[in-house]
Amino acid sequence: MTRCRVDFDTSIGDETYTTLKSSTEFMQQFVSSLSLACVEGVMQEKQRQVMKLMEAKAELRDVQEQMDEATAFAGDDEEGAEESSEQSDVVDKLTQREEELMQIIANQGFNPTTDSWDGSKLRIYFPDEGSAALARRDWKSEVPSCVEFSSCGGVQVADTSKDSVVLFFCPRASEAEFVEQILYETEEKRGDELMLTVMVNPLLVDMGVTGFGMAGRRLRERLIDGLIPAYYLRTLPWGALTRVWPQLFTVWQEDAEESTGYRLIKAMDRLPSNPEVEDIYDIENGEMSAPGEGFGLLNALGDFVNGMTRL
Image (tube, rainbow, N blue to C red; front, side, top):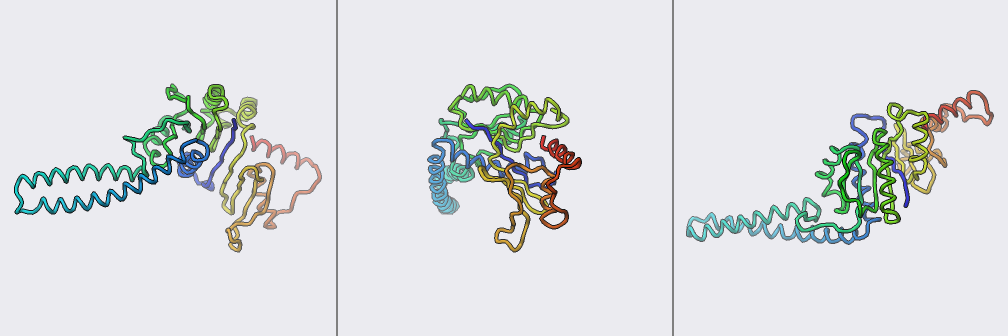
C-alpha cells in the first residue's frame, strides 16, 4: 500500500472561500480520474453510462415529438370525449417518461433506480458530517458510483470492507487523531487490498491545536513525513510552485514571451519554504543577490527560521 499527498491551492492568499470550498471542483475531477485508474470495473461502467446517455438523449427527442403530436390531437374539439381521455393518458405516460429520461441525462447516464455498484470502492473522508452530506447530494452526477462519502469523527457505521482507495479531503489538525485511527485500522483490516491512501490539502499540524513542539513533531514523524508528495500546485502572485512525482519541485514565473505563459526559474529536490520562494523570485529578477557559500550567524538563523516554517 502507498501513502501520498496532493496539495492544490490556487487562492493566491484569497481567503474568501475555505480551502475545502475552493478545492471542490479539482477534487471531483481528481476523484473521477483516480477511480478510472485504480478501481476495477469503473472504466467499463463509464462506457455503459456514456451509451445510456446517448440512448436517453435520442429517446427524449422521440418522446417530446410524440408529446407534441398527442397534445395537438387531444386538443382537437371534433374528437370524442373517450378518445380525448385516451390521449390524455398517453400524454401523462409520455410526461413521466420524459422526466425519467431528463434525470438520466442530468446524472450523465447513471440511473439511480436500476444501477448499483458492487465492486471495490473509493472512500472520501470529509472534515465534518455537514460537508459529507452535501457531497452525497451534489457529487453523485460528478463522480463514479464506486465513490462513497464519510466524515471524520462521530460513530462510523459505513461498510468499509470493500475500500481499495481512501482519501482524506482537507483534514485539519482537529481531526488528526481520527485520521491516524482510521488510517491504521483501514490498513490493518484491508491489508494488500488497500491500494492507496491520499491526503488532499492536509493541515494536520497547527499552532493552535497541535503546536509546533513535541506533539506536532511526533505527529509529523508518524503521519506526515512518510507521505509521498505526488502532486503539488500553488499559484503565486507572479507565478506558480509545482511538482508532479517523481519530478523535482519547480518554481515558475509568468512570462508573456513563453508559449506556455510561464518560465522555469528554479528546480529543487524538496519543497521550498515561503521565504525561499520569494528569495528565488527576487534573485531571478535582480532584486537581491544570491546567498554566499559561507556559514555565518545570519545564515544559521535563517536556516533555523526556515526549518520552523516547514513544521
